[in-house]
Amino acid sequence: MGCQYFAPCDEGADTFTIAMPKLTFGRGCLAEAGVRVAARGMTRIALFTDPYLKEGPYVATVLKSIRDAGLETAIFSEIRIEADDTSVKNAASFIAGGNFDGVVSVGGGSVMDTAKAAMVYGLYPRDEFLDYFPPPLGAGEPIPGALLPHLACPTTSGTGSECTSLSVIRINDLNTKLVLGNPLLLPDEALVDPACCDSLPGNIVASTGFDLLSHAIECYTSKAYTRWAKVTDPRKRPYVQGANPWSDLSATRALQLVGQFLERGVRDASDTEARDQLMWGATLAGMAFGNSGTHLPHALSYGITHLMRDITTEDYAVASPFIPHGISVIASAPAIFRYAAAGAPERHLEAATSLGVDTSDAGNDDAGELVAGRVIELMKNTGMPNGIGELGFAEADVKSLAASAVRQVRPIANAPRETNLQDIENIYTAALSYG
Ligand SMILES: [Fe+2]
Image (cartoon, rainbow, N blue to C red; front, side):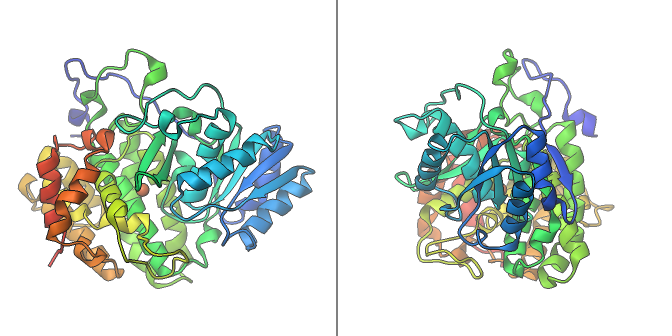
């Protein structure tokens, strides 16, 4: 079945690339930071973190380790949750003026993504910030050269950014998020220490867990790489190359783990087995989507964060309006799976099985409902909003949401079905509430 999904297509791609950092996983591995960066020849390190982590134990562990190795560091911590171009520009100035030969990032996706983009703009500045971003909003210009070596240390179990060549940045003037994607952005090395999640509130474990869940489903159900255009210049092979056998492996395991452990990890901070497995699942899902790309749930999440109004989310110490990334992704995901399953029904059935659904008597027509039903069940059991209506949106907002989301051209093209503006409007309408 898996092989059929990758059947050759006329003019379609017949190759795919796997890109991965060297990765160390396990409790206590943060203390290896100094040895790791010394082995890469770093002597003066730019350490990126956020204002909340800066004085905490994880940054202290990394700093001690680096200093014990006899290396210099300078810290940049003015990074907002859901990184924006203002913090990237400030971080780029920090890189440009710091005479650094390496970067360490300690934090969630916002921190790692800011570190990646700061190197791009610090080393290769542009007057027009969007030059390196993809069309239609960006100019799609190539990044001119190599970045600094980067050791990424995630502190949440969702983003997977330590495994991807992506940086998601909010562009304040456009009031939307855009994805900077380039193989040069892939961290060289990662330390994934699940102890970083021990003190996370359940609500944050839930929202980041749904990000990982959606990464994994989106990878597994995205358009096959053989249906993207043949790659004639290997230097230009996009990171959004579609589902492929590598992404299948890691996405499948990630789905099994999140299906088994999400509710436990959210409910009980002392359940280290569940939280460790969610951290591993997030890393696996990062390995998957970093090599396949996401599709509609992420594309439609950007319409939601573009147009959000008076809303904040419990346990996140940021100003209103704010909707965590994972919640903005999962809120319309069940409606998307119901819609998208017709384009890849076997894949949706397999995803439902991985999430713990008994699909032994199910057929292709049941696929979308089975995935959606399981995701809704997990959302209800972990206190997530029951659709975008609970995020403050109504029927009257649907056209604006769709007009914003439709600008995410590449992820929309990575969906298993061709999807137009009307389809997106229909999905948002169906996502207002799940009853
Ligand atoms: Fe995500």
